[in-house]
Image (cartoon, rainbow, N blue to C red; front, side):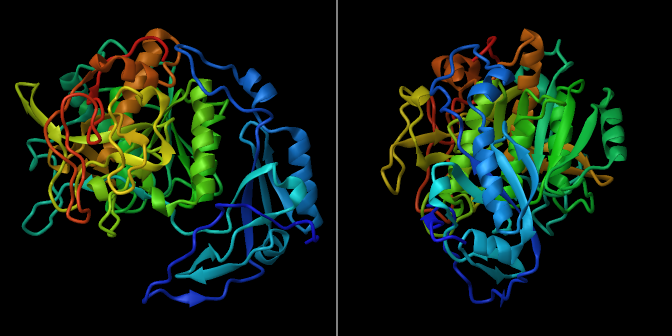
Length: 515
């Protein structure tokens, strides 16, 4: 590494807390790894997205993608250190490199430790000064699991036996729920593609065929797309297969004539980000809406991840691609045990449609009551106020409170909500087993299916819908009862009339053409 290569890439790592039972080891310097280097844009995207405005992909590539000159500089630097190029994508603003771990450590003047068979950085990544304004992130050194799936399988309280459809009369098939919620029934998602991001698990075609046969509707076309070596790898019903099948069966039951493109990637920050950018810039399948049901509390992400994911979502907004993200299943604490409130990322991105959770009761196929999902303990819909992203412009009049612990004036979430309580959950088929599954994992594909219907209705993408729903809350049915306080946080948020940090504006059921 040359002497000029001494610019620290701030926010490229989080110090690792090694716990008592963690096993430390020595990384293999000859291990061959891949690293994604993210590049700056040619120029910044406009800050506002006008109603109905969708940027063409050509305009994006010509003006807001990465430049070939910047990519060439990064490649030259990498090749000088014995690294090879796997792929260059200017729209994705990504140069993917391959080589020995030791060569990467030398090139980027950093070091890696091994904990519990995973790699973790010991210091911030460094880049040449000549590239300090070119490179916005370096992903791939750390391969610890980045996110968890936001689904919960309904169980009997006594012996924790899994609940079947027949044993849960308060559960719903997704298409049944669509009718109860008043989704448009004359559309099927024909001509649309729904992208689904998965960081593990897989699907079996036999399950898809049998499930939709039981619903007496045609099964959607489902495509498995590999990102960074991730594959459709079904195993058992108690694995991440539950997440994959929930996403496919919910989205497919709402918009069964849409193509479902499922992007499988490793559960790392690199894999997650690469899956998102691949989906957003997939010109073959061209998804108009993307569903994400994986995440983790904001404090667990590097700032380079927060920034680069957010920029990818900003690009999606400009291109008219709606991003639906589960807001979390652990209430105001989001699974953290420090006694503070936390929100989940990537749902906390101001360009993500954060999907919260409710508990639903129905009588004669009509809503009799719907409240914030909260089973006490730590099973509840996520929501709160970001400690990283400032209050979004579209939330200026939503009366978002300050973040409880820091008083930060941040982006509030969720934006919308729907049934997520496992006790009033979704009937699904996973690896041949009939299960009832809940969690905000179900709400993201539910909303993605709904948006596909509107995209078909208007023959154009509704795109970045946030300004529309915040300007016209009547597009949602308000949820005013309940809270998301949990036992592991000192406090939480309470639902009430209007927007709240438990269910947002409530259950979305209508949209106009364009955002």
